[in-house]
Image (cartoon, rainbow, N blue to C red):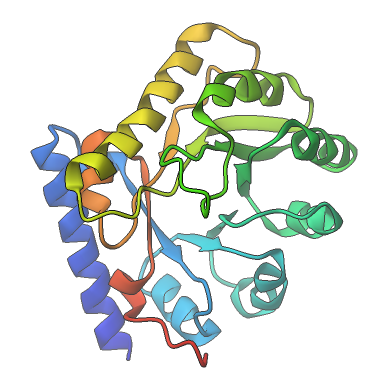
Length: 234
């Protein structure tokens, strides 16, 4: 199993490097995140032992369960699924970044708790595809929400996150990613308080990472490309 994971990590890094070269960028500009949803701790641990550093969990409960198994390994842990208000304290204890801030109410609740404990990195999640099944604020709301988040004590706005359009049309998928890049650039140009470090773009998954990198992704979230097809019985 370790050999398969090692090969998968090498192939994924090669895809990232090829995509960044094609886009006229450096491979060092793009981080590989392990999208760890429903993966056994043994696989996540092996991937970290092989040099992976960034883990994305969809649920705070998964973070809680994984913490004892991974605490002895250096890594960063991002929440890439919805954050419920009653899970804020646990998220603050375990996450290094929360990528799914999609409304002002959640941002304010998180900021209040973070101010009492410690500042935390956050991203604004934007539904750039317009699909009703996708989470995130509307693109027209994103710049105002980013300005609000940037001004809240306890929160450090580091960038933006989206899930790309689910479509076989590569041009349409690329457009959904370019929309997030445009939002990021607008926010950086705004001069609003606390937005000057919002450079990160978390977008792209196993099937479309090349398109995301072409659009400017700085983090790609890879699950099946690393761990193989997900087993629903895991």
